[in-house]
Length: 223
Length: 238
Image 1 (tube, each protein chain N blue to C red):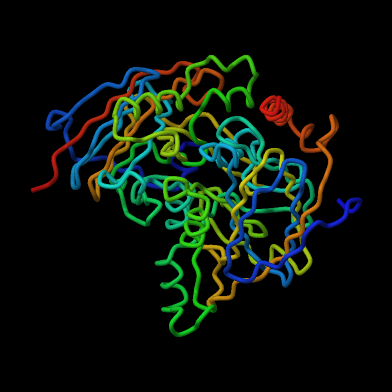
Image 2 (image 1 turned 30 degrees about the vertical axis):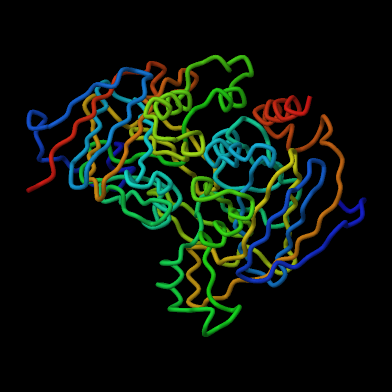
């Protein structure tokens, strides 16, 4: 069964060309990235090598206490998975961004980010030392130096990750449905701060046991 | 839970908030008095509230998208805040979130204290924020919540549907504190409840002292992950 059929959504490509982007950056495997995106700008994440989880948080750039809310986002669209048309909603009900193109088909927002502590629970107490998303998130917000802390690291989006829920209420980590070159593109509906951890997890198949780089691109707002 | 005396019993009125530091070794029973109740809940380590209930870690450690007896609620620090030690319902919702002022007004129309006094329409987000404020916490501390007594079904394509009639009068759930846990509850309606009327329901809470979880505790042995979660929690108190 192809990914497209199981999702029941039409994959939508963007008309924007990479060569017209005003910003391009490759996030190395396992690294964080933090950057502001202005209202009206388009923001794309490209899964360069396929099946790479991109743990992502967004904040209202004018008030970091108003931030992406996984529960408000899925509640308002009454659907667990993120794809074209999904509005990314904040804790205060602000629409932060809208997904406008998606060649992967669906993205997770229940699986959260890996952390040393959750790795100890999930795999073995000896896993404490392993590089994890929360370490990347914390390093990024400390270097950003705007007073953010662990209180601001909340339930994130996992772009390109496939975490289906069964009718019996089980959470499963299924094989990825992304491939090299698949991307997701969003339009910022307000000025936002984007925070990414390009996931370094080696204990499960979320990165196909081989974390790889991803590319982020930004296009100017339409005139 | 029937062996030890009830230390405290109280009714949480419809659309109200309640908070308490649930001490390690005590257990809270929440009882749906009329059927169809919804209880939003968020949980913090009282000694260090930046350690708080973590929805993804709870779900992925136990491979679940529902809560019932035998499962536990994890903090973001790999520790267990509370265990679900008893449940007559079978399904409590961890994913549906809470209601907002905009949602409650769009569903049930305008409402104000000036017109309705204490029956004015409450919403989950404001109710949580007010109660959080009493403990020195605020919007940065508002995290994903659980909804006791409610159920949201998820179809293969991801569609989420409120499951009516999930809880009956007299149904109850037992939450045992594994740390000193700041518990914040509210009895606002579930955000996906399709009922056309504003009709939140009351619940009763009762508190008992219970022993420390034994080596064969059902929550501890339900999964190897939970065994490690209890070990990490017990180490915190060494």
